[in-house]
Image 1 (cartoon, rainbow, N blue to C red):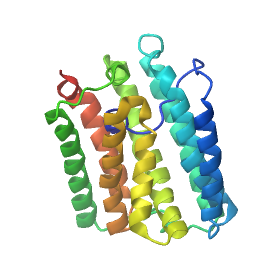
Image 2 (image 1 turned 120 degrees about the horizontal axis):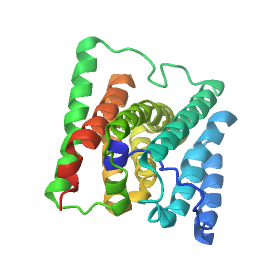
Image 3 (image 1 turned 180 degrees about the vertical axis):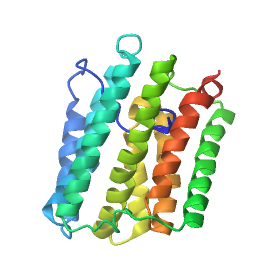
Length: 260
């Protein structure tokens, strides 16, 4: 899926973590303080959710990146898919609940149905742009990480579980990183453009386990998926496009994208 090939969320790594380095801890504390102070316009549940997304999650992913190389061959792929899906749903539930408790409306979160032509147009455009980003990476002969190659499905049962994970990523990540994070940052920063850029950067950072190419690609795809939400007002095109990109990339294009 895009979260794996683009990618998409922080990959949960089992109990093989190494201690988080001091600079990650220090940076996380500083980011948490800055975020809390900068988001004074938001009620505390939304401010707390922002601290989690801008400080807690990136620190966790950076702390896991060193242990990620030990995953291939030691952790079953299906277990990774299920753990990732569960983490996504939990994060989406916490973030959405915090947003609603802080006074965000369902419209603010993009939870509305756009007109059929708008839905089809934005979804199709986002899918095409997302696949183009993947193709550009292949044309530039970007070398993918060993971990990324390992977590792609092989068997029929793995493909089915992977498809469920793609749907979880499409819904969960869009609720968190587009539906909540973009409008929350826009309120805190006073402008939508820097908010969208920062949200995409955070989204990319959460793919640090894929190395620099995967981090950059995820950030670019984050921007691609932000446009339909910002311009149409609905999160549904981004959800559908995200899910489709993940499924297409993970189940059909993976051998081509990973070929060296």
